[in-house]
Length: 443
Image 1: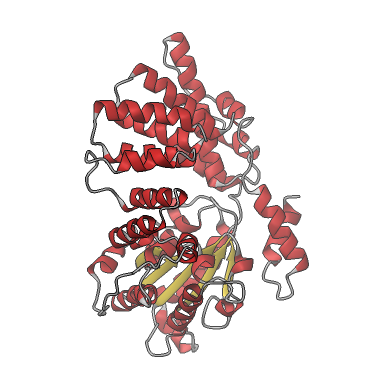
Image 2: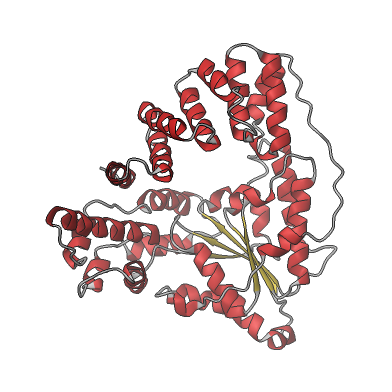
């Protein structure tokens, strides 16, 4: 049984003990839908609507369930009732697609427009093309965009209180970050005397779940710099030119708050290879990012841009030119010291015996931080299960953790296998040498 299945079964057991718990019933329904148990989810959602007849969340989830089963008439009947006022855009999109499947194309187009007007983020270019093929023109509202400092963007910035003291292990990586980022921020005059600029770009890459975001926040804490973390969803907008404006807005706010660190998560989504991108909008957004990094018309002094990606091979090569993300660091799975520290953090405040953390950590070679958290969750569940059976609370033990290790496998292995291929066969510049070094040490 996988971790998600285990969580679902635990939720179902909890629901048996509290059958009238509506929030819990909603969570169970979402997990059932995600697990493909659509019919079971429908049963719980119908129970919710019996208790709360106008619950919009339940109506929307039930519509999604019917849609997944291909019962389009049920979707239309369910969501066009007067009992459900102010439908969210996602639900309107389902109604639109259901009318489309019923070959009522004009009505489908009208509802799609309504959904877009409510929330531009639900735009579905594939569906829009299908409507177009049926001679349905979707009218999109235009708006004039005037740039002014955005309060929302300003609120995204913070000054992290964590530092490298809060990150166990990874000493080699931390020292590289000190030399490339922290020391220049702390000793700007010294570095300027050698003709070095304070700021620039640095790309962090490695398997998912290995703490790239945490490292970026700690770096900002070490520099006492303002910090903002963004991803593609913070940038994209359906209106022409607005995505680029959103990106520019964030950089402008960072310049006003210097010293600042902009952390771009999933850089490959914003800075993907323009040769591979089929979207004019995405190519334009990539060009905007390159322009911001170059700072042709602006001063980027004391502005550091940290990018993170799980797939550096999909990042546009132009991103790695001098002055952009020309410094690249590999964030490997946690080393032994880091794994011990993560175990301590995950079990902090929990009822535990004297755990042999080193013994457990040694068996977690190539585990990500997320994997280690999953092991701890499994171990805690084992203790809870025993407590429920015996009626006596007991502490989590080393044996619980070792038993949990049988349930959780490293999630980084597939990534490392893919990365090895790129490092072996597509590494003319030597950018992936750190991957080969890591694999040689941990073969």
